[in-house]
Image (cartoon, rainbow, N blue to C red; front, side, top):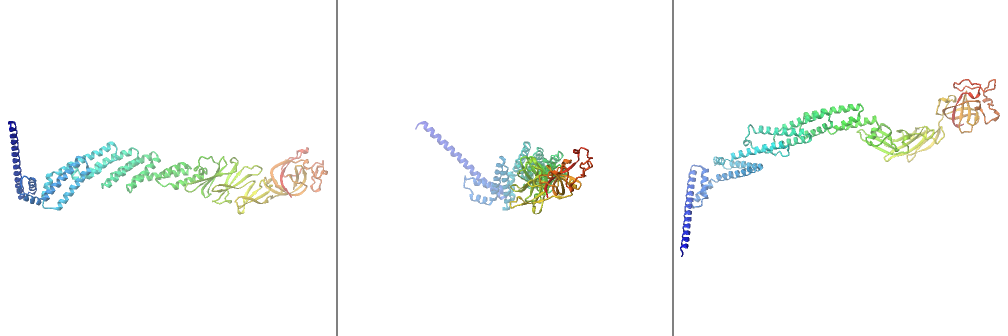
Length: 628
């Protein structure tokens, strides 16, 4: 064996011996510690210092260096098991709380705190033998000091969070409030009571937040935030009446500005939002509501005055603006009716203002409406507008045959129709010598149906809705045509009647343009007609008739025309031998001593006849339509 190998082996032996000696020493120490731990545990146990005894028994139990009184140790630990369990519970709770606190997880921390409180309650109810020792273990763990420190740190964190919201003007997350409410009072570490501290903190925060929101101009957002804030406190069982006070004060300020500046639209919008807010927060009464109601009443009085003054649009503007906060339906309807009654054009324009209406007429309580209007336009359309009590309007229109430029009047003929099926009369300029062209239209859902169009001097409505037309243009004057409705609803002529008023011919000039009849003595016939004598009045008879001398019943119309009367007027074409005088005894005209015809009494004031026979006075001209 070489010397090198000999030294290496020896070194190994030395190292091995050293290790063995070290292990023997460690073993000896461990044995000594276990024996000492058992001795200390027994001593504490004998002194009923259970916590200390349990601690040393646990040290001895975990020391496996020697099998020394293991059974004795196990029995004592079994006896002291409640103390062992409580020590482990405290340690476990501390670890859970420390973990949540270090990561600022408040909800996890509160879960650990609640679990700790639950364990305390359970321990107190489970075993009363070691009550003093339980408190000792708890106090020695300093868990209460830990709780106070942690909760104070959380409080400061939450206070800073609320301040951050104020600085950033962002109030979407207010969980810091509700976290503060969860901190137990004994750990809050503030001056005064928990309630006083939190109320001051929260009120200052809410005052700043809500006042800023109100000043920003978004009234709805301001009230919504007030509602959310109020409900948040309610959900967390915290009384925060200042929220309602702050909200109402700011709302009153804004509404008073609306009223002062007469911004009705803004006032109504804000009032509507506030009334809705009052409902959502279950506020039974509010001085702001009183202010709103008073202003609404004042605006209604103002609108009523405008209606009386005929300023209907201004009144409607107020009523309609107030509609969102109070039912204005009745007042709006009444105002529209008053406007339509005063100006029928309003009925039509309220539905279709783009049309240029002409010949506008209207009335009340007709055509199944409270107010109605009739009108035409330049395109030969007829319009019927109806308005009911609530101000609702409807328009019916359709084409008519009459030219708008020649229309004189529009009217409803109540006696020819019904409210459901009215009849409209349109009077236009005549094409001939009659008074007017009368046209009748039935109002139907699809438009207007022509019933009759006749040019005449007038009409009346007879029995069974017949139309009695005086002097229709297609009949000789003095005739009355009777028109009756047929199965199709249109009118056809069914009979004619003579309608001349019997008068004394000497009073003819008093019946201007009236169909009359009277007896006349025709004394002369010429190419223009005839000369008749009625009493002492000479009358020119004109017309395309077969004239003859003698007494006749003449019928026609005096239209105010006169013509000069001379001796040549007496030329009797039927009797040439008359030589320009009236030869029959009964028709002899008086003459003077020179043989000239004396001027009869015409019933009018005339000057004395001069020597010149062509300068005699005038006589009335009667347009004869029939000679009998």
